[in-house]
Image 1 (tube, one colour):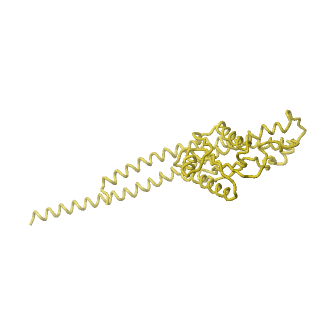
Image 2 (tube, one colour):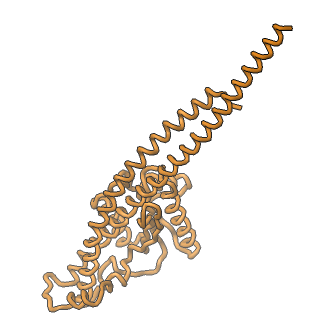
Image 3 (spheres, one colour):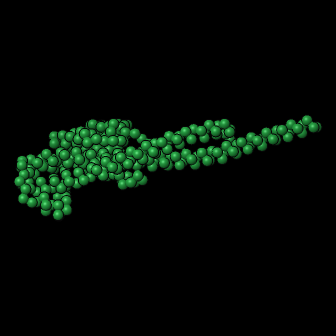
Length: 295
């Protein structure tokens, strides 16, 4: 049985750890509120972008010449897992990478080649540890991504697709449901899905089909809008991932603090038992010594 001093040292260590986990929980909660506000502010812009693209596509005589809409036989698939730069967030990073690896196996089973691009230090280190070649990695902004970060990723993906190096681009990220629930989403980014150009409710589409004069031609406008759409979708994914990371970290640190409290209670009980055992042993020794002197 451990001594009283050993148990005291362990209780002190667990208490110090609990202080850290509580502080990290509060920081994650504050960052989560900001991340949720950014998502709410971004959604109207993304929805309006879809409506504008749908209206412009309907006004175009042909969209077959646009590179980002070209569909070809899928021989190479680019998979882009969106992870965090830091750990201590429960299963946040692991579930994205697990889904991405499963997708990679299914792609190879279909006879296609997989190329890996990744956002986040955790994803980059895991891919390299498993021996996968990483075409490009981005890191340093998982907590608070900026639009420029999404634009950098989108431009690289569009370049790979337009040059024919990849025939399909899929991003895998955590969609924010709540602080307790983060759902892994697998989204095709390129080629741009046809249903995107047909999105929007009937009333909005009727308004967009009005008698408009386009300058320049609708095809040229759509050609400019398509890269912006890819950037917007990447930015949405980064914001969803950032909120999911903070929610997962807040939950993980709350559970860690709770477990630390339970461990402290258990260790305190062990310490009291050990102290009682020492006191009992000392009493027995005193009584034995007194009996020896009286004999």
